[in-house]
Every structure is written in structure tokens, then in C-alpha cells.
Length: 239
Image (cartoon, rainbow, N blue to C red; front, side, top):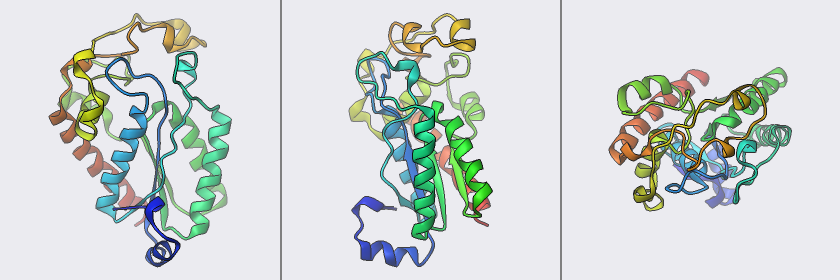
């Protein structure tokens, strides 16, 4: 596994001769309860990308630290960008990666609200180019939840919950404070589901789920399964 930012121009020129896979981690900077850092989505996306890169001989690009975080925009520390801004940004990155001579690009997302924008970027690029671009947001989540999680999700959403907390306990245990983890399942809100209410007004703790039952062991086995699935998708896309 290699980090693009640490390479010289000569090193990347040599590696590009083999048409390697480029992996672009993208996350968000927003609250994740009292027990996880604001950069949780970034740390998870980057760690996921690095684990994938080790399996596909890939090169990891610098992480995009800001995503579409409108639902937390009024809470301190949140840095959000609009979906049109994110779409334009990712479109330029995709075109630049193709022009550099990589074999394909994999966008590795750690923030669910980025997924719609990523979908449009990949589809629009496919209209103009045969350069393969794959977008990943934790493929096979439903099966992972059934097999490895003790708690339920909040209406299918993952945020500062058992899943994310377990992953970060494996990836960056130094950033997790389990003594401050609490379980919270806010009431369902039609205003959020069908309107423009922010998540920040629904949860007292910022948690949607039960992180108190998270463990690094769960994180490791789920990361292994996620990497296996990612490698399968990448190998199929570049076959």
C-alpha cells in the first residue's frame, strides 16, 4: 500500500507504468456523539481505503475531509459543503486521476450522505469516458448487521452507533472514549424523513443507535468482510 502524498514525481511515474488502482477516501467533519471524534468518517474511510489498497496493490490519495453534512450544520465543529460543490469537486478529481494515468479510481466513502452525489459523478463520467470509476460505501451492510451487531439501527441509519464505534475501536482506539458512549434512539420524525428538519435537533447525545455494545473485535471482523467485498467489486470492474 502506498500513499500518493508521500511519493515523489519520479516514484509515481514509475508506478503509473503498471496502471495501479487509485483509492480516494472521502468522509465528513461533523459531530459523532460524545465518545467519537468529529473526523470519524474520515478516519474510517481512510483506514478502509488503506486496507483495500494492500489487497489490490493500490495507491491511496489524500482524504477529502468535508462532505455533505447539512443535517449537523448548526452544531459546533461541523464543516459542510453543498452537494453541487461536492459534485463539481469530485468530477474534477476523477478527470485528473484519469489524466494522470491510473488504471481505475475507487471512491471510498465513510459518510452516507455523500453517496447520492458520488452516484451522479460516476454516472456522468461514464457518459464521457471508459475510465472505470467505482464508488463504495460499506457494501453488504445488511448482512454484516445481521451477523455481527447486537443492537438495531435507527431506521437503517448508521451514526455514532455500534457499527461505526466498533470500526473505529479497531482502526483508531486512541480516539474512542467508551466511558462517554450512550445509547439513544430518538423518536421517528416525519419532518426529517419527508422535510428539512436537521438531525441535530432530534438527538440529545448525537447518537443514533447503541455504541455501548461496540468492540474492537467486531470492528476487525467487519472490516475484514468489507475489504473482501470491496476487492471482489474492484476485481470485477477491472476484469
